[in-house]
Length: 567
Ligand code: MN
Image (cartoon, rainbow, N blue to C red; front, side, top):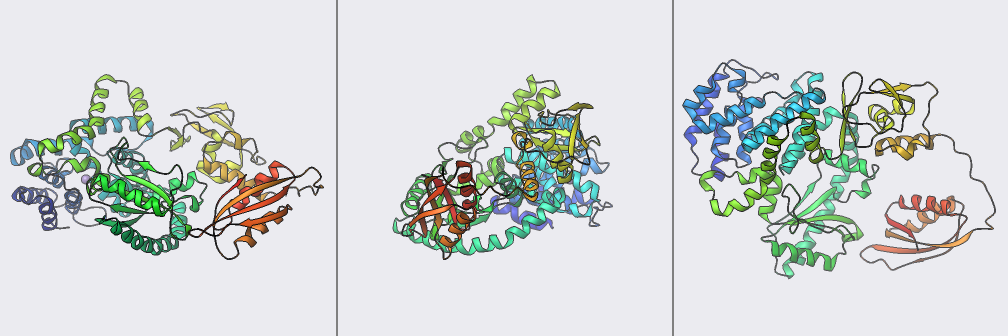
């Protein structure tokens, strides 16, 4: 990274920026870090340079970029705050001091975490730019995490996912949140990461090729109605957020409609709604999936229209529609309002900026009123770590679980085998039943029995999908008693409706599933495919409702099937 590259980036958004100030800060940092090396062997100055560049890309103002160049000067070298104040003025000295005070946040158990968060929020309430510099600093550190020893890597990655990424999200800086998480992901869950990458590679490619066709079709459609989109692009979901979503859907890719979403940028909100209408005229929306975040923005300020539609070939895709301003804000959130002061039009920006920073103001008030750290963390967690709890192993490793999670969830979270062999639990040293929901900050120890094995009862109380799936898998692996071959005297006729993408072999696959369950088929009727989607009406002779549920479940897994229901 070079200072000229940074200056070029600054000038893009702010031609009148004070360049000599930036150069001055660069020279100052250069001499301050002269003898220092980073862990990967390169000169230390690379780090502040890269941090400053990230902020320049975010179109931050000159004091922020300058402070970023100086952000480690006090911390890592004998230079004093006073010198910075004399040379660079009050504002920059204040920012540098703020970042320095945040210091090296360490993620060690709950109490440390309370302290860390308190520091962060105090700084945030003072000046949001301090946090933005800290986030950029962390982003660059994550990019160069490889050079650190293994043990440190994991701790820093953990802290990034559990503290910094949620802050970026809360500030509405979607791009930073996604990047931070994706950089941390392989260090924390290496196996899951590898698995996901393997799964996703071809899926992303196929999806891209398909979306290219959709894009063309969309352009024509919109042109007919005299809407010229500024941009239509597709964007692959970030890996970590994809993995989180897959966890919610039992690792079923077909349920993740926004694996690659299509984004349409049009010039104003009116065009957004018009575009939505035009799309719905041609492609039917999935009920319940239209979201108007323009009329009702998310708490972090995010605005956009979302819809999920049956598109070309009957495939389901998600489309997001927004204006360039909404787009910029979705990517850079609160930072979007920190344009160079020289360019800011006070009256124009006052309203959204105040609105956006409402949350920070609330935090400031909170800080005044809340003294006990426990209370502070609890109130934060409501918002931040939505319904998550932190418990620890006897060795002090922190585990983050959803609220209501039980010792069984905990055991599976640590390791699948530990889950299967889980015979009992101790919570804070006391024996506790396996179904007892865990509380924040408890220490959990799993008691392993050689002969222990999962119980069907566990499925009733475990909270995480991960544990649920592992238990179900275990039962699948056991030999189930063969199905009784009773007569179908009491059976009754039932009709089901199958909604599917039409393809050769579909009917064969569907009927195979049904006959494997030893169910008689009375009749099959299929509709003419519309947009590649076909509806099949199947009349069955089903012995009992449980049996039917099974069939419905299996049918949903047939390739191309979107939905199956009893009618
Ligand atoms: Mn740093």
